[in-house]
Length: 89
Length: 483
Image (cartoon, each protein chain N blue to C red):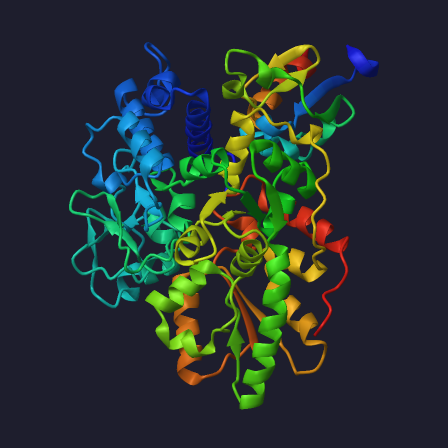
């Protein structure tokens, strides 16, 4: 794992992701269980470049990248589910 | 309102696709395809019973986004026809909200209902609490006779098991003036003679069945024309995206606007004019005055509570003053107000200086459709400096505070706020008018949305974060200077 074992979570707060629902992801850090605090490293990015994908990338926005995996149509629930998988392992 | 729920995101996607269609050069054909592009053959059906219903609803969402009335739709007119009408019309429609009939669930009528949690207790406080004899015991459980029940909720309050609930119809429950009700087929219908255009029904419907008739195509046509187009951004804009207001303004220039003005400029004029008006009224012996800048409140006074009229400041709104300044400076220009509010669309239609109104969601959709990344935009420099108090107009308490500061301590001023309209508040205010007195203060700020304009029905950002950003931007400015 990267960053001294921390899971790297990059939230795209680029304009397209923000308009298409990333505003809710601003609260992600607050919504994680406290015991995950030192296991997860959350940062905001502008932007991850996915919206410029020729296949109308905006439809899959917002995007969140967890380590090397890109998650489309990201929601707080979706990100937490993914993190559960990674943290339990 | 929640700014990122599915219904809101669907509305934004439809808007992005229609803007892209307009920009494609093949508008009519592309517009026709929107419901099919969003739900192509064999696609997943996320929300409704079948793909055909999903498409039918998306078609109606697109009609509203093109500025059409779903009430007048015949189901068979193609979206390309609505798009063609949008290209030709001289003026947007006068009513701003439309009910997406096909999306409306036709919720169970609002009533008081005894749930399975009823224990059939011996005390039976519900039966004694009911003043209308509507509750009887059948098969060991309380049952409400709908004919006799007056929905007073007394039984709900006394049930020790919280077994009695009020079934709500979200749109009816949200409307502060009872303007949305069910028609004969059980679907929502708006009584235009009462509607304040506040957008509370739109924000509350979990099926996304109330929509604004957008003026987006009219605005895109204006941008495409040779005329100068002035974007006037409401103070709430400072909190809407992670980017600064200056970058948002540059984004609007990239999108094709020629000049961007802060509506806070007009808010400075409103604050000073209102301070003068207030001082004169108090000298005359009036007991209170209300602010006048909330468009939904203005409609409320006009349609529901004309007795309040003598107490409302005569001052024009920040949008009006800003548009007037724009028209004076750039004769022949087209003015577009950009804000969080549904009611401003109604006000814009009635104001001779305002040509069009765009909401923040539509502005966001415009950026998405044009691939404008605000983080990469320059910092736009506004021509006029605005005051701290004017920038705070978007927050509850901000307008009353501006009047206080603009008064310069010359009069006894006790601000009080109506933070959000609801039936109870409307009744209370009517009492103030009757008595000529407000018990809590002498300058009453009225805002239809709880929290102020940052909680408007067409915002992009969470209202708490938005409020924080607006306040931070205001803190960078100087205080308003009393005249």
